[in-house]
Image (cartoon, rainbow, N blue to C red; front, top):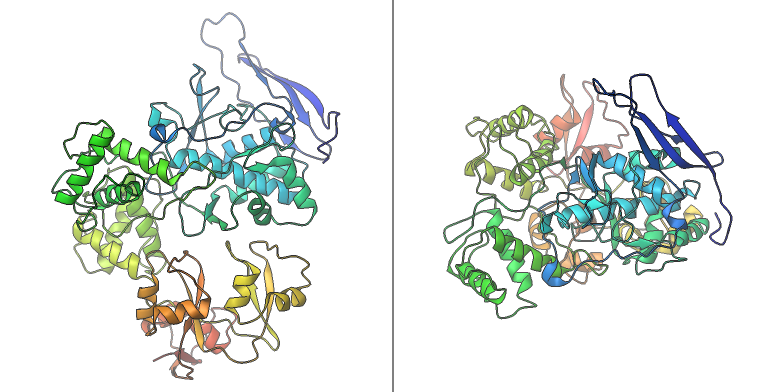
Length: 604
């Protein structure tokens, strides 16, 4: 626990695993800590026919990297060599690790992403640290790896791996080492969560060093222990080293379909999301290279102004100036975009392009693979949240039978030909549903108790935001909950003082595709009124943020008598409202209904 301790805070063990007819494994210098379980998985390989004697695999573990004095150079390369970006944040399944420096001839290994994170955390830090310190470090480890994958950092340079085990460039990884129980438990819980800046999708570049023998711009591993002992939460610890507007997000996309290039050149007449992506990238690059002309074509349409911008870009960067976005031009545009947006540096701007507003132009069917399939599966997953007949497919980038079943169910729900093939009609329906999904699901304000209501802290929350949302003050919340600092833990339940007067607003959770203009139109109010009520200085919105929406005070509701077969979900859909709104209006604490029960239905 003490960064100044000069001794060895563990006992080293050696393990020899052997069995007749198998090659043996020898694992040396395993750190064993007081009260901390270490699990060593060992795979013994059968001896080959005619093999005279056993071959021994030797693995050296050693002290964690935090106790070493090696230099950390976790930086992005120069702008002209920078990497390009994937469309969405994905978990690589598996992740490919190079067991050496990037240019070395060392071998590659493939492991599942959770196993990779467990290995790195066990190799980097002490498992006996306070839990908040462990979680902060594990978030940094996860996000660093996802940033390398998202920016295709090594693969863009022709390497066949995602990340290295060199602490000079990336993070420690010892293939075949034991994993500690405290670390394994946390990783199983948060392996798909990562750090990003609000309003952006890119994993933040969470560089780190030990903070004692090596210092850096990013997180101090030993510093996290000090902050944890002061009672700070993992997010508060991370905000000490990274920008104040970072938050914890999650991705459920697990795939080995990792390539940003669409596979075919883009030229005049091309259309779809890949075109919109290139237009977005060139628009951002133009801020740094103003010689590139403005693109006036409609988003997703490759017209003459897009061709002119591509041609000028090619001329500036010594590419064949043909106005066609082939593989080399795609990579260079993506590379420069990543550079000017600094996706792999601490002051990263990040991006929020996501799926854009224009569907892909590809026709997908069973057997299709790649990034467009990932986008399809993501949209179907969102749709499944609101259409009970649509099953959520695995988000793996492979169009299998499960994805086909989900597509056909969606097509039937939309009253279009249910052929399981995704053409432009199905794409457009998916995008319409995605961007309009929130129109009939406003989140009503919670029902207060006699003196307070309860609120569960979400990623990105702060006491100030919660106080603004509930028309109270930071001090009132801290007093009611016995808080001595502003630090909050995601998932913590806070008691919120009841407002003295009933607020004339409802609450709405921002969803992908939302804008202030769309929300204002949906609720019959104005952008200015929403910004004023929420203290917003700009039009930027973050998915998941709860907005207060001005409404006229009204007790307007209808009554409905529960019948056989009714559920809250069925009733909510029938009347164009939400389950939460019905439960709030009726003071329900569960989804159970009784036949003959009279419910008040919000609105009409």
